[in-house]
Amino acid sequence: MNWRGGGAARMCAAVVVAGIGIGALAPQSALAQGGDSRASATIGMDFSHAYLFRGIKQETGGLIAQPYADASFSLLQRDAGLTGVTFTIGTWNSLHTGETGADGPALNVKPWYESDFFTGFGFGFDNWSAGLTYTSYLSPNDSFSTVHELALTLAMDDSDLLRFPMSPHVGLAIEMDGQADGGASEGVYLELGVEPAMEILDGRVTLALPATLGLSLTNYYEDGAGADDRFGFFDLGLVASMPLSVPEGYGAWELTGGVHALLLGGYLETLNDGNEVQVVGSIGFSVGY
Image (tube, rainbow, N blue to C red; front, side, top):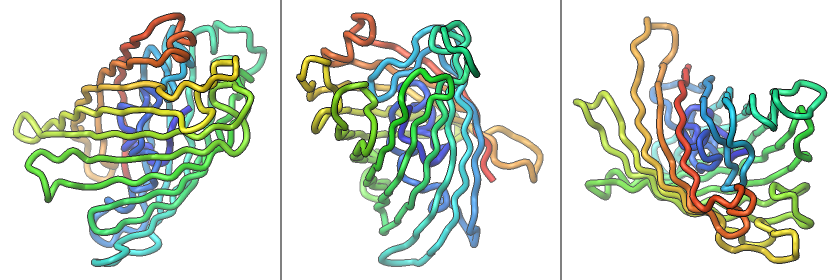
């Protein structure tokens, strides 16, 4: 399960690995399109050996493949004030070979651990972007109960203000029905993060250093005994991305790879088999149109 909403950006690389990321939460892909383009689409797939959703262990064994697709439509484009409004719809999936998938007890569609549907609106204000996203988290092989969530995000493009931009963001996810932690009450999740980045190798590769703090505002990390851990996790990653050369007309291809180290809070450490630190690597590709 993850913050979805822009497959490619996909939390781009970060997401798949750690099951976090805010960039994908706000539908912004169309806002980033140049020219007169009013529609854009992204398809892609990421591969990893572990999947943690906001620090909550989902799978840490076998091969994990996470295909996704989304489409964005620009509803408004202006030069000042409210500079853009987009509508995004998409899906994100997680296929496992481990105990929560093909090697597990599920009777039907065994590898298909998760299938999410998301839709929402993105808003641009000069160098700010905001998002409002609804996500339904489903498990085709019945590994977890369905969760319905409403998320709000705010991000800043500070590239014109700082020599080394930090790209800060904040996100708030509100569980409307169901619980990601399997607890007794719907919770509220808060995420704070930055993602400084730089171009290397004459601009052929972009290197990012995302850092994310995940917190429970209320009942998001319940330990089963009525206690709610405020601190969920801290994630520090190193992510590289580069465009791939393909014939014109076949879309914009990008290859992404990264590694993340997650420091988990007390309850999430327990869920992760007593491991306080979880290191996760991933590689993936995306195609934008």
